[in-house]
Image (cartoon, rainbow, N blue to C red; front, top):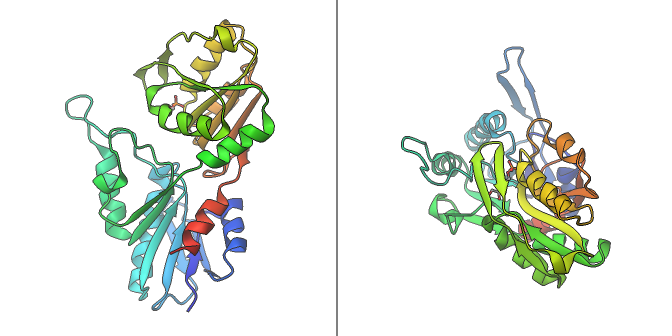
Length: 293
Ligand code: R5P
């Protein structure tokens, strides 16, 4: 029997995956909100002894997670052989330590909750900072895919004479990899986060890159403050307008509009989260990963 694949939030990435996975059946379900915001979920496909796969990005996780857990429970109750989750963006990775006494390390609890409901997880560039691997918090098999090659290819084909800028030490893992694949120079700045939406970025020494096109690369753009502060510094240094690349287009509130209001050349993201800035396709990473399971 073919494995069966679902999404609770249909989007272009899911459609691409369905097209790229002819050996998989598209599952049929219906979901909506009741007037009081509770979830209605109905699964039409027969899941008995089937390998079931759910694809859903976990941005806005508080709203999305409960329906996901209902789905997993229902799939098991219907006799599914296994229930796997593909979360192109994996949420709750940034609170990975108790910075201040009493803070809840939500990354650990979120991982426990998902590990309890799913048999395996595939994701793209999770925010691994103090955790070196998802295995430190997830008790199910996990596969981590990387979009660095796709970002590097985009840079190679679209920007001449670039310098890649990483706004903080955490970004170095992505920036160094992308720069080496694209064979271009990079610099890492120092960031001091003063609050959820307040960051300070150190002044870089960019004299010898004055003629280059700066490309700011970060894994997540959320409030966009990190990117905006970096853009402002580059402007102060009279650099050319920056290209801003994010792997995950979280864009909280009106942060996309705010970032766009600065003199940036382009804002471009991978399609791990559906957003108008999506311009780097990562669907084949997921398709290949499923194809090799
Ligand atoms: C955190 O260290 C991440 O790598 C990003 O720099 C961060 O998530 C960006 O957040 P924001 O867009 O809210 O500044």
